Length: 593
Image 1 (cartoon, rainbow, N blue to C red):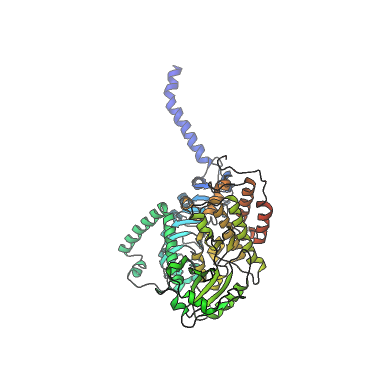
Image 2 (image 1 turned 60 degrees about the horizontal axis):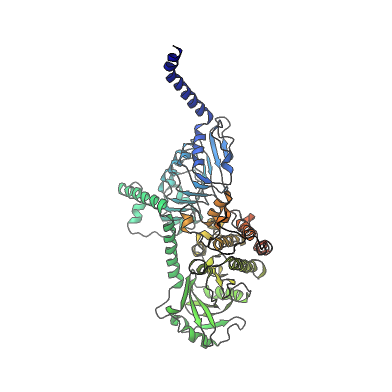
């Protein structure tokens, strides 16, 4: 009888138990907590700040980075900036109905900005700058009527600026700079109040705010008519394509964009007539030599330059084509051609070149002189037979061993340190990258193109510099403000070190497909104590102590905070004392870890 009673009561008992579990679970964590747990689930790695977010807590108000209203216990602030967080932003954040501040800037977030954020109608501040977010700016952000500050700069956002943002009448600050945005900036509503600084670094934008006239080809009119059914259909369709492309071929998109800018720079700085350089050096050209560095007459040099054509081109960079010049006595030089840019170009250029020509250092490429022609400047440098570091790392079959890589890093560091601390006036390079490190026959490094970024500076110089130095090398604050400092050079040098260590470019597809650049990949490996895995597995002779010390230097250099980066003098000291003199018996075997 008792057994039968138990069998009869079992379904009821089970129901009661399940109901208790459900009630207990709902009591264990609020809906806001559930939304934040979904956010944590989408995070791949961080510096550990999310480790104390526990589902058994009664509410998330004591979690790090979370602030709640004292009375309602609802989440009003999520602040997790600069915590090396990698992953996508969960759309469940849109369930935080009372959220006022969302600060996720200077991390490694990738993917799209969730359109669900448009449900958080209490939002006043959104800070998402300094990540790797892609795709479109959600039109749903126009629903945030309380929004006062919106910063989504220094990402990889594409498409147009939605007209819905013009309805944000409380918006006081807006920053969408340093993205890949295109098309006319809507002129209706509050967007008309913002100046060029809000849109800096988006070459495809046009409108009165950026002093760029939009092409009147019919498409512009459509793009400014948000209530056109046909246009809305096009926007939705193109939006789906862009989001899909962002998710599947983000790396290819970045490569295509860089190729586009490369072509732009080629046309702006590198294009010459079919007649070679004859048009440049004939009719009024003169040779200026620095300190007798060119033991030839001006007539002999000009005669040699007139014979150069496309067959003599050995490179094309952001500042122009580079030619190989072989004199009759066997001496070889490199000639860089730069097109004149404005009326006051000659006087400023010559004054700056005099300064650059006076700078002599073992680890800098020597500027011998220049040819002053009516249409261009032809800079004459020493020719280095080892080519560029970029070619040595990525294009040649022969591999650089550990000692060679350390020697190159050391030479580049000393050259940059001289520019920053010892030459007068001090010089900020602005464009440190592997293609601007040249190698001689012994694989000793020479820093090239120093001073040229400043030399060519005009009202568009900040844009030219950003494009010339790929986004993977540029410091976050430089991407945002366009202001170069010694610490932005230090960041670029840190990226260069990681490139030499890994044998991969800073925006290699293997990083991009995971939402990283090389710095983001390093940060991810550091959180898992796997930083040694960044080293090129084909590099022979790696020493563990030396590698660890070099990684420590690189990590300091690529800090997101400029104040935490060392000076280049300090970098040289660390390299000499801790990297170049490791324990000789401590070799690193990449297969042993």
